[in-house]
View 1: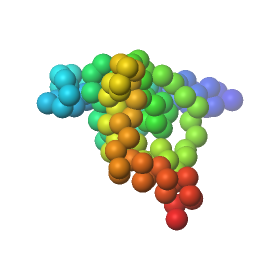
View 2: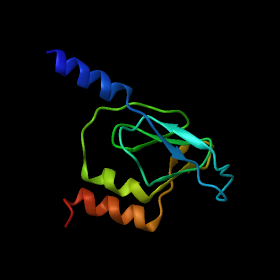
View 3: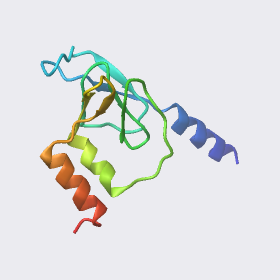
View 4: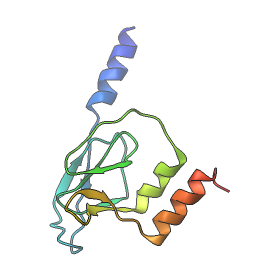
Length: 109
């Protein structure tokens, strides 16, 4: 039971930073906090941050999520998290991201 408590606390406190993209759409090059437990190659443009246990959330502040893995989360590893029309943070739906999400939804076929 003690080991389970330690592991639970360690995973709840895990935090990494994801650098904001410098030179793209107002990026400042500052590191942004992320509530993700792993590293991410996705790009965040200030004031947006990439968070969630699997790095699947794009928001204006770090958010925590349950720690499950879905195939579509891999698509966000190269996606851009930035302010969208209307000012809210979100993933920019490029052709590559749209195709990746469609493939993941189809079971990778």
